[in-house]
Image (cartoon, rainbow, N blue to C red):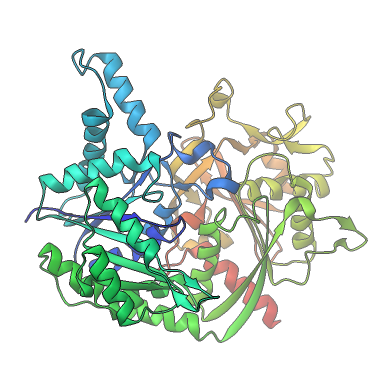
Length: 537
């Protein structure tokens, strides 16, 4: 049987949730024993989001092979078991970069290089490459970023038109659109959807399914109207309503409408009966917690809800697995002010977390938070920059190295507890120069980290340039720090934890990137357990 392709487009406005919708539908097909692959096509000219501002783009999701990708790949990972790699995300910048390099090498034999066919052919090649990531892939989901009508998206849409025309029986388009409710008129309006579909049809793509994003389920007469004016069967107009408690309810909402069955029929897919029992149990735990805890996240990009998307989700996964409701309160680290009680705003929490980030802004706020957690024996997890903060706070206040710092913050510091790798010092280009992707880490037995993972060797994903300076390792160990995780190949300290503390751990990697609702990350589970123990006492 030939591979099937599902193209997901969006209309009317951005941020409708194409990534979430794609991941949720893929979840349903996987639960019918259909092997899937996921691809995000991003229209922006950046080669990847690695150098983009988190306030504008949100988090950068890193794959095992070191690709810096769009945050929608985080949705793909959390909702499915699809293999994600550099072949799972492509940008306009990557496409044009590849085509121009081929032209410079003479691969086009002197031909005039144009958007059609050269750019569109490269886009189609990326789609086919994604379908070959693993054996036995049956369905490939291709999400096109942006909104119909954006000039940046036109080459991708043209490529899809061609791709569909070449595989008439193997492709469908799902168009996610917005149906607004006008309060003054007390009416739902379908005209934006009609215009969006009209623009899509002008390009040459006729949607097979229309997902209508709205606050409430659409009445039948509105679905009939959308069906009539958009030339789509009524049974192919589906609701994509706002879920009440969690985004993880979306697959169940789509299942209620038998969206998976419709897709299987349209693509002539042979599949097994669906089984969502584990997913349903997870949702039941989420909706019926027996305990409640409260955690403070002190970071640099808190004002942007997507900047720490995977961190938030990993906390929810861990808490849900322990029948616990977790309240997350974010604090902008540059707004934390020291006073007589050390930290006025950030106190009375069951735990603290300092996530990743770059640059000097908010540095002292994170150090004060870490000091407070250490002195009051409150559970703490530091991730990437958070591990650097934990190390420098310890050096300043326990080792009495008052000028201890990171060479990222102070190039001339006399005590660079955190410093850049020697092989990174001569690199001038920022893009793709960090330690990226999955690396092995050996754990020390009888450590809290080993108890969490329950194995000697782990593999975690990295995204950073600065490392712990081994020059200070002995001093740290002599004063109560355990280096419980070491990358033996490069002799790098990956995990630090504090003795005589319920739970104070800093990790150089990003554990949040490998957490799923059905398999929460062990470090986050251990953090939640420590918070529950503290609250109980």
